Length: 449
Image (cartoon, rainbow, N blue to C red):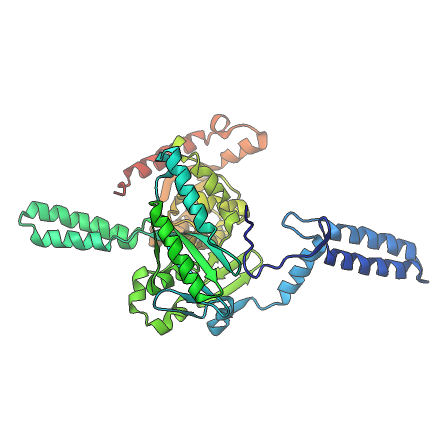
């Protein structure tokens, strides 16, 4: 079992189990400080020493994410004074590659890289013998990596490109003599165009990225890997320059059109790939003003995929704050129901939520807002009608539905009493009405073919 460590990873040197050199240095500095206090002539030195021990002890407490509390505090202080926004040429300092050759070879300052696309098969439908055979061949591909080389396995969600299929339909329309058949083909072209350009359908694509210090050896390794993948009927192909550029572009963002590469000159490939702006925040970072997310954001989505065929609907309820739980829910959701209390304070958070949901499309292309749901509604308050009108004003230009159902404010009483609201509050009928409305709206949507 090989353990793959990403490039440029800083590994702390450990002296004893779970104790690094820095732990001993920090501990030694503190003990020296404590000794100076104990042997000094300061009045009340005993209280000062006890206070310092109470303060210092938590500093060495281990943290869930690794390291100790003093490490995290040091990182926070360092981050607060560090530069956080980069644009233009400054962004290139975060991009390691320097050029892309016509054959798709990626040049780095001291090594090279080559990308190979990997085909897909329905592995579960194969017999055990065929499964073992393909695993054995794929194992040989990984064992091609020797000293001075490395390998990344990469998954990218790319939109389906139906240009060739659309062109074939256009040709059939031109050749069709029957007007009825021509109209049917035109309707199909419109549907294909919608999927191809507007409501894009994403599917996973897999790649092997080989790295090596010597160009000749790297290219030989790639050729052997492609040959082995074809032998086990998985299939593999080296990416050319344009395909490699799109691959690297997807590593930064998915908000671009793959066809753009046809208008880019080879000497401008790097400028095209590199983001225009990077911004680091306490919660993560943004690439061209779009939030970037890590694997921690997809745990829930991965778990739900294992059981999604067992349920018609899975409802995820989260707090209104943008926490890791909320990000996981947005990464897993296909539809987002936005509950809004008809108050001015609620309106301020709507714009931020809409921005967050839009940025989540980089991680979850299928996410969409099902609609705004008015909650804690009190007909007696005159301000409610005015706020609801403002909510409709926010929703209308964005084509976001506002559900006709209204949840009255008595629903909150169930939480205080600890009882299920569907059986103990007058709002039960409101929620039942909303569920029926939501399902009717979902069923009325045309299926994607």
